Length: 95
Image: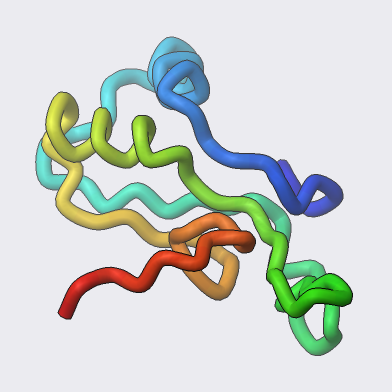
């Protein structure tokens, strides 16, 4: 779990390792990441904004999300942080 590492991100290698221990992700699955970040709910640590306002919290690497959707048939991704983007992300998804 990444409750102590705000820069942790799930990698394709993490997904492959998880599947080696648990079996393949089923087609049509929703993958929910439990990073342990929920331990910070109720305080400033959940947003974890540093002095310049940039937030830091665990997430998925883009490559891992793409692999799960394109190669595993995953239809949903969830997590226990404010966003699926990693904290310092400044990009806004198109509407």
